[in-house]
Image (cartoon, rainbow, N blue to C red; front, top):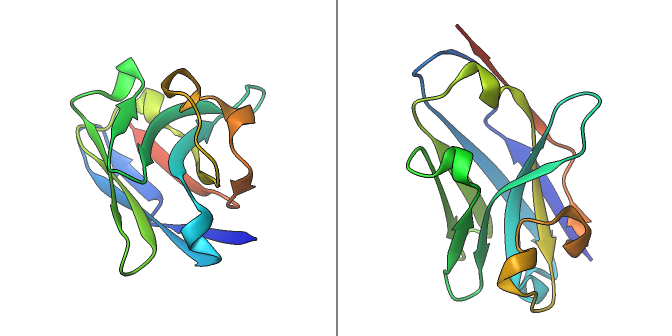
Amino acid sequence: QVDLVESGGGSVQTGGSLRLSCVASGYTASSYCMGWFRAIPGKKREGIASIDRGGSTTYVDSVKGRFTISKDENKNELYLHMNNLKPEDTAKYYCAAVGRWIPLAQRLVESAYTYWGQGTQVTVSS
């Protein structure tokens, strides 16, 4: 069992930056891949970034060059550094983890992940 708790959300203006954190507790060694997803009311969660045990990363096109996913294994923490934020980035952001290898094509797919946090809200105003 892995418990995930996100923090770092908030309200910023267009062009601003935020850093989201996700603290993992429990049997964290089982987490092969971790990712960040986001959702707005009425829509399904969108995968935006993932990082695997070896440090390989994937990003959805809309955040490439603006967002960076990273992790600190000593602290069992996952991060999402978000720069040049836009109003369309407004959403609730979720941390996710899975304890098995998943193909690269599934790294941003919601159904591939087992464990989820409760989310943290990010609001970007114009």
